[in-house]
Length: 489
Image 1 (cartoon, rainbow, N blue to C red):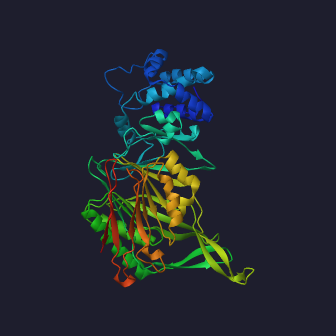
Image 2: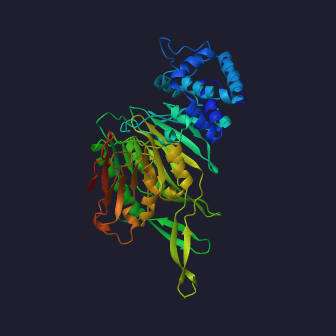
Image 3: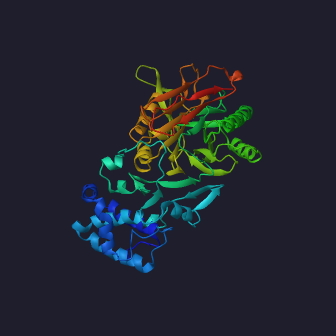
C-alpha cells in the first residue's frame, strides 16, 4: 500500500494524479503522446481480473472497490513507477477508473458524505472529492462544462500535452502553486438552486451601487497606508434601500447572479439584507455578492480586512471572501519634496493581508464561477491559478477605482482561458465622473468574437441617483454575445 490513505476510488484517482504530477513536465508530455485510447480497456483489464468495462451497468458510487482490490492496485502501480516504459500504465489506469463509475450518481452520493457540508438550501461546500488531499498535495474536483463551450475546443492543457486533459469529468488541482499554498473552497449549486437550460441565458445583474460615497478616509504618510475613518450611517441607509431595489428588479428579471462593487458596504448592511430576503416570499437570485466592507481586524497592527458576503436568495450566507491583494493610492506628501521643490509622490497601500483563500462556485451548465475584489486582478499568481489551474468559466470582479486601463489589460488574460468576465465598479469611486466613465463592463471572452461591452456612468448627481443596473445575458451557445441592457431607476 502507498504511504497515503486510500479509502475509495476518489482517493485512488487523486493518488494517481499526484504520481503523474510529480513527474518532470517533459515526462508528463511523453506519457500523453504515448497514450492510445483504444488500448486503455484491454491493457487494464488484462492486469486486473476484477474489472469489466463491458458489464451491464456502471458502478453507482466511488466506493465499489474492496480493501483487498485497492491493495492489489496500489502494489501494481508502485511496480509501474519503477520502470519508465510502464509509467504510461498509470495514465491508462487513471482514465479507466475515472470512466468506470457513473459520474452523476457518484457525485450525488458524495453530497451526503462527511467531506461535504450543506451550507444553504441546495448548496454544498467541500474542499475536494478525495479525503487525502493534504497527503497527496492536491484536490480532485468535478468538471462541469458551460453549455456555451465551443465545440471541439483545444484547451490550454491539451495544447500543452498535459495528461490531465484526458480526464473528462474531473480536474486535478495542486494545492501548492508558485510560492503559495492556496486554500480553495468549492461550492456546488444544485439544479434546484440554479438551473441553466439550452437556449436560455445565464442572467447576471451588476449594479454600481450609488453615486454617493458611504465612507471617509485618510492617508497616513508615516505608515504609508490608506485608512477608512468611518462609514456614514445615512449614506449607508440610502445604499441599503438601493440594494433592495436592485434585488427586487433582479427577481423580476429571473436573474441567477447579482454583483455589487467593493468598499461601499458595511457588516450592518449585509446582515440587514440577509434579514430582508429571509422575510420575503419573492424568488431572488441564488448567488448574490453584496458590496464589500473594510473593517479593522487588528488595531495594534493597523490591519484591515476587505470582505464580501456571498448569500442566496433566501438570505442564507453561503461564503465570505477576503480581498487578497492591496491597491495602491498615489498622493502628494505633506512633508517631503522632490529635487525641484514639488511635493513628493507617496504610495499609500491598503492595509490588508492575504489569507490565500479562494472560493469557486460550481453550477451545471455554467462550470466554475470565480470571485475577486478589485486589485486582486493584479496578483499575477492568483489570476494564473484561477484561469490556468481552476479554469474558471465566469469571473466576477468587484471594484472601486477611478482608473480602468490597467484593470482591463490585466483581465485580458481571461481571453486565452475562454472565460467571461463581469467587472462592476462603484460610481462613487469617480471624483468628477463623466458619461465616458465605465461602471460595468462585460468581457465576452468565453464566446465568439470576443468583445468588451461597456455600461457607463449615467450622469445623474448624488441627489438624483436612484441606482441602476446592467442586465447581462450570457448566451447559452457559442456565438456573439449580446450587449447588456443598462437600466436606471
